[in-house]
Length: 609
Image (cartoon, rainbow, N blue to C red; front, side, top):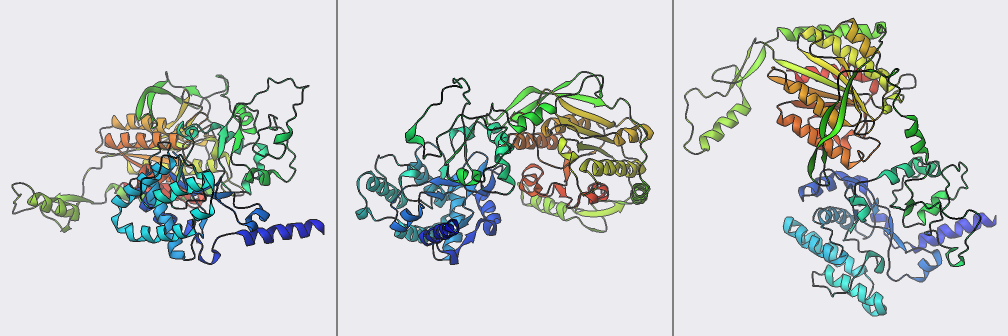
């Protein structure tokens, strides 16, 4: 009974102490699309992902209710990091929902214009000026936000000492005036909702191993239920102390932020207070050298012995890799090893799969003799809109272009087909997961590759099928399932039937290897198709933005070589990163993995027209 009353009292006082307007709340999910468009239109990086902000320590005066409730010390403020733009999950700062929505849009403009130099006040003041210059039509909204925000800020007459000086600096900078030389940080003043902060220098290194291992640690097992985003800082684990000496520091007993050097990586028991303790901390300290569950799993993924591994096909090939942090292409950074299964048993597909392959094969056989549209003709059945636009543009150019028979028509005609296709299949460890209650992702990929091979063999067009996975940059495995020089027969079908989950997904190196193969083909059109179930990743720094940027650079190189890259994925989060990699029209998302068998071939048929 006492505990129940205490919980009720805590919830009641905390709710009364809130200085927000719930009736005017606007959620990040409601304006996420508008924020993304505005952020990129203002010059923000397309590689940044949008995420809910974590709470940060703030200053400013607190009323007596906040002191009783113990609140008012932290707020979820906007934060710009190299990989993430973190905005509050919900905004109820003002009593008008229009102002709260405009605040989201302004934070997008402010973030896109923000340049981190270390001076929080000066950086935001300069970002405000740049943002208003970029979007002069937003000035009226900005003035409304500014008036409403200044009306909420603490009165200078009610503050004393350093608090009054810090607040004066912030209010002066908000009005666009040149602030005083006093240095002010976000923790020195009340929340400045119209400004953003910058991530720590740790984030600029692009190394997320410590945070990634911590998220997979058993001690963080609540992460599946607790979706709150938290900040981390890297620390070095120190096990050199005398284990028989127990230091006592009475002044730190009530501080959650004091890191205690105790290895809890094998502690599977939960006392029920882990999430609350994490919420009370400004940052979670992570030690990358600890014995975590993630490191144990990675140890189990070592390469097999040479006698039981697949057969290497020649020496490895060294390929470059893009480092977005230094904006340089590192030569011979990755080693790609082409391989082939040693012993593949004959593949016998189930009857239902044979029926599907037969139906799609007959559908594609028709494509051999179907008349194809010829564009840019001087006569034809219909207007070629693209050719018409180009012709009229040339007419308006220097000297003008005159012709009695402009090449602005299209007509249907039979012609020789000139198309080569290379399909790259992601065979990483994630394909071992279950797509349905009975079928794994790797099984769905195997069926899709078989149907794809059956269908394309009917068209007579040359095609190749490769699988790929990786274990760091020195071992990128390219599995040859069918080469351009091989026919679709029992041997190639057996290799497709023998595919199994591999390791990780160093996508950039695989795309570069496929680009080299397709560049040697004599066909006029060369199609590079990628089949995957997730984003690029590997054991080393090839994670997050690093892997995304290298893959994007590899796709740009494929475009420059005259190829047409296209991605087919079953990843539900593909919309977050694939438009940045392949463009809005350069990928297809299969919502149900079991539909991949037919959708892969249908996507090829659409692209081959």
